[in-house]
Length: 475
Image (tube, rainbow, N blue to C red; front, side):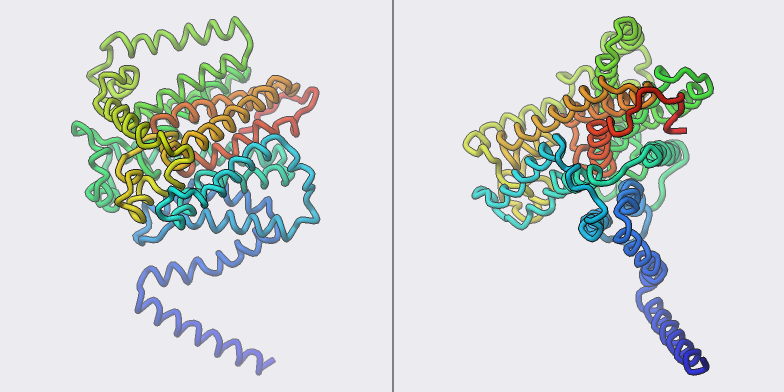
């Protein structure tokens, strides 16, 4: 006993001395590592032991990594944290394979996403690629993460309780993001945020003397897309619920999220609302509801399109310009760039290779034409890197997932579940439409929620019942 106590005392002393030395040498970074490491080891063990726990951690981290990157005074690739949890989830699924029903992978979503993933793997051998190792940097957001999440959700027994956690997580982080954007807009920026603007962010985030709030997201475009998405969720749920307290609660959230969208100054996010709301009306298949919905939406669109009401307000004026793209110099520049790309890609049906555009292309192949033309769009980025063949496969995959979702939602018998899935599917369609003007489908957390939502509405029949007592899955 005394010998063991002596050994533990010596070990504790050595650890304390080593910790003190590391803190003295490396400062706050060493302290952070020493504090986080034990928690990280426990987290790794828990994920390996229970794959569902790993998935729920992933749902939290897709929002957290942007906040960490924005606020922590250290320059490390926080996005690799997502790669780490993805890798652990794969290991956990393999370690716990006897507890899983691998037959559940026999699902249309698996084959659709799997075929797209297989195509992107073949792109490694694209002879046009100037630097094949760059494939990994973009393949993660193109297909790798989507494929892993597809397998995970199909294999796991996702329950209604898990579904509630996912929705609450999305709404809660979105409230925090909106509140931080209000702080940026009306109180001021942190030192790190000012440094980010001075490093080049100001060119796109301070326009005509007005700040486009970006909260703790990668940029204002992605923040605006997320705020528009959750605004649409709450708007639909207001119509879908019969409970007045819930209507009031969703109305309050709608005001918070919509103003968050407004202060982002993201014009293209308006199409998340327009396309998503229109698709929701299509899903309703109720002529009276469609007529009422159009009566509510059309006056607002017409007001923005054909009047100057509210033009003195910067946020309203930004929304208005989204409906007049041919008067927007940046949109006209995009069209010119796409004309150049059409000529360059004419003889490249499989594109220039994954990892050749944007920052990755400028880093590894800066002299290549693909790195010198800004895509300014998720679909144009795909067009550059995987060509018209790859882009066609990708769009067909999205269209097929939406088609499966429509079929599943229309055949649901549980009214509460049906209303929730209508909203999620409508948001998915809205984000897909916005992808033409912004690369948000490849950025966290938008891309990750897109993957999760796609598997929720394509597998929603797993929770279906003939009739359940009215309950709110997000309360």
